[in-house]
Amino acid sequence: MFESLKDEQRPSNEILAICIEWIQKGTLIDFNARLDSVRLLANCATVTRRSDRNALKRRLLSVVAYFEQYTKVIALIWFKLISE
Image 1 (cartoon, rainbow, N blue to C red):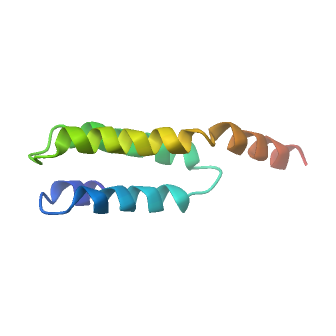
Image 2 (cartoon, helix red, strand yellow):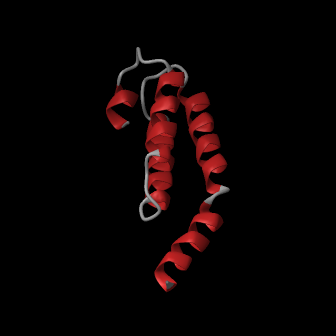
């Protein structure tokens, strides 16, 4: 993901797709860490030379906000699995 951010020719839609796929392929254990990684990527986007850096940051944070809706559900599933 971070390598794709360095490529100024790579469309932001492609970077978003990479991030979404990466979050979706996560596990219950690393879900929050993956969200944190995309948050970090959003902050890194602002220091690149990309012309769309601010828009990309907002879009990446929007992806994080979408997936954050599932953190409570994932936590419940995780604790249920542990307690069995």
